[in-house]
Length: 288
Image 1 (cartoon, rainbow, N blue to C red):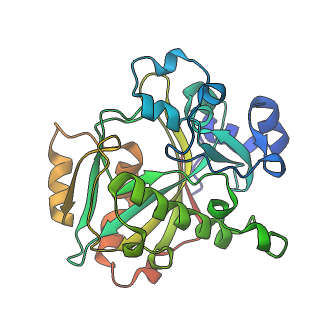
Image 2 (cartoon, rainbow, N blue to C red):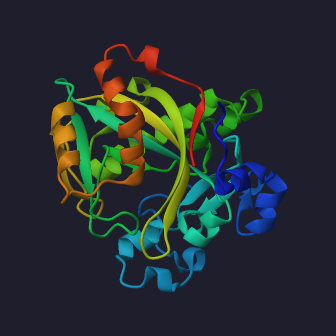
């Protein structure tokens, strides 16, 4: 029996490319994006990009700067149509109108098959202090993280799933270094295993939220962690049973995407950690 779509799901599904540009005039069409790699703290001024906003009142300066990163804006079918700042994509009022972007979630396991968790830093603007999977972030709207090089663009299907997976793997290597200090040599892009995509929406605090198509990536590594305190408050390796015990603790808070993935998929995937080919899916799992 087909489950009836929620009103929000119907809204997002109904939006055409033209509808998205009309609703969100600050979204830059893909063909007009500069390809500038605004990432981490590689730029000095962001006031012209993110603007002044009461949404930022009391928040950390570094995290505000990161709100100028250019995310990949998508249509319902996960086709990139343009770029929008991290701020634009995470304002709840925009999300309520259907604005959707691409994300990824890394699940890193050590040689003992323990999962590396992180607790998001107090400084984080969205979902601060919550426990979550190893690394959760967004590919930038630049060729390498869209999944192609400028030299090969004419011969690459930039809208294919394989291309998108290549891009999010590149972004995952970058963010594991930025957030957890894990050197790229210990997590090469070729070692990541793509499992599936999760489409979800969740409000956060203070007018912020998430609405993403989230690429799930598994990787095994014993690379040393040097956590960035502006990103990560704490981290720990856990077994499946230890994670289940954490979920029973009412004092611990978890990110909504992590809870969704755990409730629906993670523990089964974990059982098959050495034969993940049986767990992969090209379907977008809609959780709206």
